[in-house]
Length: 348
Image (tube, rainbow, N blue to C red; front, top):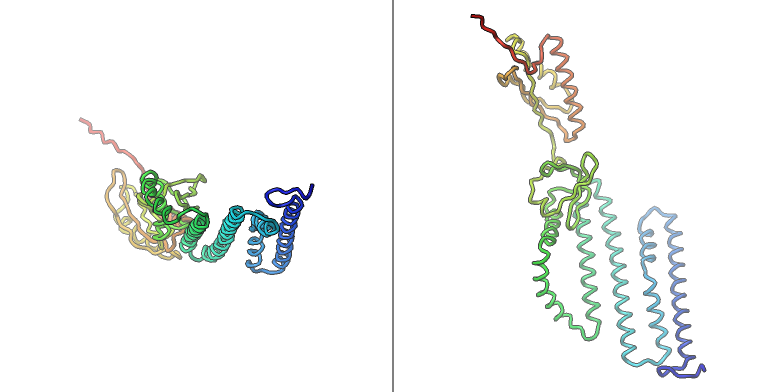
C-alpha cells in the first residue's frame, strides 16, 4: 500500500514529505521560542529598550511563515511538476515579503515611539510631526511590498496595473474628495503645525485640549470632559485661537463707583490701582483710567499683563487684585456702583 503511486510519488514518499514538513516546522517554532525566551531573560536585566524591541520583533514573526518555509524545504524530497514547484516558490516569496512588511512595520513603530517619547516633553510639535511621518513611512513600505508581491506573480504586468490604477485613481479621487480633503488637511496640520498635541485651542465657540491628530479628524478634550471631534478640512477652514502659544496674557477689567464720590477721591483711584498691581510678582501694570460716565456709575478701566499663559495663575492674580481693591475702597469709604435709578418728582 505504501508503494502506491499518487502524482508520481508513492504514499511512502508523501508521508516522508509530510513528516519532514512537520519536523522542520516544529524545529523552527522551538528555535523561535528559545530565542524569545533567552532575549527576554536578558532584557529583564537591562534598562535599554532595544532588547525589549528584539523580543517583540521575534514575537512578530508569523508562524505561517515558518510553516511555508518548512513546506518549501520538504517539497524537495518529492517529485512535483514545474507548475506546482513554481506556485510553491511564488507563495513562499509572497509570504516572505509580507513578513518583511511586519518586521519593517515593527521597526518603524519602535523608532517613532522612541523619538516621540523624547520629544513629547520638550517639543510637542516635533512629536506630532514624527508620528505622522511614521504613518506615512508605514504606508510607503506596504505600497512597495505590494508592488513587489504583484511583480512576483506570473502573468501580472505591474507597469500596466499601475497605469490602470492611475486612471482609476482619478475617478476614485472624485468620489472620495472629502476624504482626500481631510487627508491633505491632516498633512497640512502636521507640516504647518498651527497646533500640536497638548495645545489648548478655541474653534468657534468650542474649546479644548488637542488629544489626537488623525488622518481624517482631530479630537479635543473639552473643559467639561466630553470629546470634541472635528474633520481636518473643517478645522483648517475655521479661525483657530491657540492659547498654548500665548507668552503673556493681557487683562482688561472695568468697575464703577457711585456718582456721589468726591473729585479728590476720583483723581486718586488710578494711583491706588497702580500701587495694588505694580508690586505683584509676575504682573506688569499698564494703565488705569477714569473711562467715562455710565448710566449709574463713574466707570474706570484697568489694564495689566500676566507674564504667563497659565489660566489658573491669571485667576489667582485677578482674585488678589479684586480683594485688594475691595479692601482699599472700604478703607477710603469709596462705594462701588450698581444699577440704580433716581426719580426726581417736581411739585407744581
